[in-house]
Length: 446
Image (tube, rainbow, N blue to C red; front, side, top):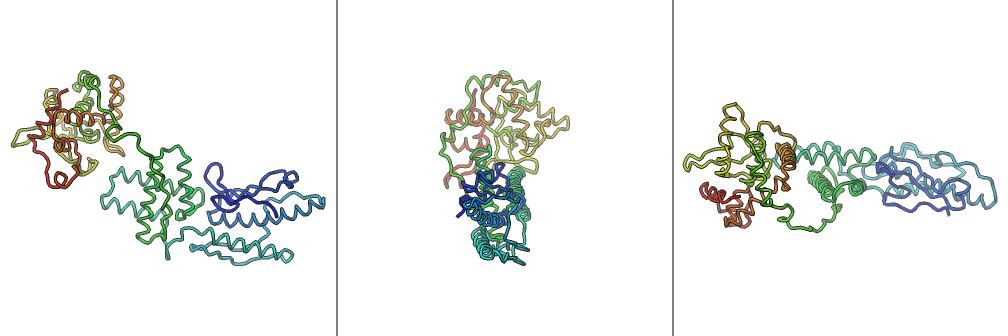
């Protein structure tokens, strides 16, 4: 009996090409025939076919070649001269072949060679067996929606419900599009388990971090879970394909360092916002602990004075132009007296007189809001100033300084925009008053 390639993860006689973009038929040539045929294996690209079509074609070629190898081995034993192999050996002639969504094989007409009817019938049985085995992720009855249509409805529903920001939608959409492009390039059905497995393998083989690859798989799992709930599909092809989580090597508080005393002094002595207003970003971060995006998107109306206490404060909130990380991020943060001494209120008054509406009018929003241009500027500025700490490290610096100054943890959480765990403080205790917040913020004494 002729020797054929073993069954790979993609099916009998099938392997993935070296680019990871399509399937290739592959069968090993028996050792005694290799000198005569001039090759160790026979390969043929099937990247132009769908996944099921490739399986069907591969089985037909494999059965035909195995039969030819058997005949050639018999002829070789009789020292009969061999003729060159044709480009395609396909004795089993199936007319109008198609694979239905439920995995059934439909053939309009079958032509069997009378001289080789036993071999052709055997080949036909092999085709039927392989087709039954390779029917994957059967779609729901009456499935009429394409992958793109399902993605569009999934994205639209989550945006309408306010689940995502525009940035989140863009990230999810990019992930879903990448899977769709992968399946289209390899001629695979996006609803099949094998397609999902191939995509996971491609992610692992690509130059992506485990965290990034896991995000792709998590988002696709969520898409098909939603589609399954709406009966757009019969199964979730990404179920069970999550990557194992690596054990964290550092705690959350050690992932980013607080600023050193030298970095703080260097910022306070180097920053000159009167010459470049963008340098206010570092001072604001150091005296509020606010996130980069929260500061970069501040409007002039976000800097207010309380009518009762006379305290100036930042009203950090969200609207169509401003976004926050979560609901807890909406808060009041008193303006530190050092910022007033440095001329912040004068700067705000000048901007208002000029007709400006934002604290940093030079920065325009991108996909990630206003954070990206602010972060890029501060990265260049701190490098020139010889500062090691990054802008987000100011949050760690403020949190650490307030704790060391004896400020209660619930007040620190109110200043930083963090939620409190537990029923008492998390649900029933309201935000600290402006006078109490001001007393806490003034404990920042660098």
